[in-house]
Length: 455
Image (cartoon, helix red, strand yellow):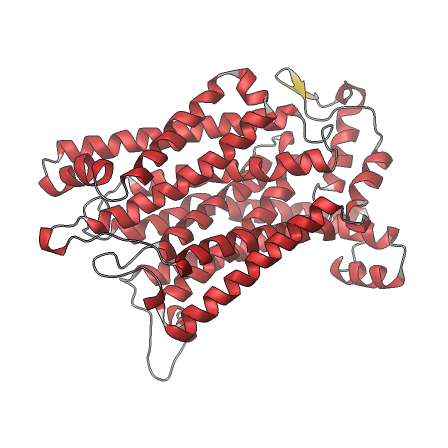
């Protein structure tokens, strides 16, 4: 039975190219010379990566006193950036694993973008808890290793939870991404024009032969990893939210945080997916592979998760009011909307509550310019949300005598800009080294859709 090409009113694959044409186009990206725009972007991201190295060296050699952290704001940009980057990585697992298990064929064109985004985002996030220790050379203390000194992690601390969550999430995501690459690496090996490329891609392909037995084991392993990765969407950011929920700080001690953080993570993750695929789709001419239907589906998921985030905001305010706790009421009704950093709070409201409402209209979901600008604003809004939760809650705690305002230093800003640059540096390298759309899955999709996939 032929699969239906249309999900709604639009196809998920446009045009008449055969499987061979698709393979030649998608496999050609690793051997294509980078254009002037790519080289410029790569240079800028490389410069920002150097800035990140400088800021890290300065932080480690001098101490985290070079950050703006101080009492009462002992957590600031380090944890804000950590939670933000972890959240961005969630859409990758959602698209790759959950949509695969649900047999949503539209994931095929964008799953490798999302998987690479997950890996690169987790790398950015992982460095912040280590730096925040102040003595990063003792980071191994977070792991439950056998020690003759009987040094075991403090299980009541949030840091071992984060270490376990990050390492598990990164390991499963890396295996899932690399396993999906194997058929394409073998195709690159077979079509390589130089001996060096054949050797490199041959080693990476792990002896892939493409026979029936190989594909049978591949399908079983891919399904198993998808099943393992799916619970991570819920567990990882729930663990991250527990960093705050176990504290008694007004604005933190809330049981709503786990589902609220998970919804926000998928929300910001899909926004970053749009930020990445829209320019890539235009530069590499992939409008027939990444169709308006893909953009429309991402926009709908942003609308759904954005509505959940908005609902979470409303519930937070209702709980603060209903609790009759004067500290909670002050935090939500005075400290955040009118205290120091109030502009960040209102930026959060505009970007996370109002901007997603544009996607109720089909024309807005189909406008590439609107989608791209909205995705950037949502990422700004989600970073602002982390700032509000972390910094604004600590600025106004229980005792008025302990109140103080927070201001980031150039090192804080440099680390944020540097991680964005390093993320872009890795992503641009990914675009040039491996096929960023799964060739094997696209050929399979083309064969299943047949003539119905053309339009």
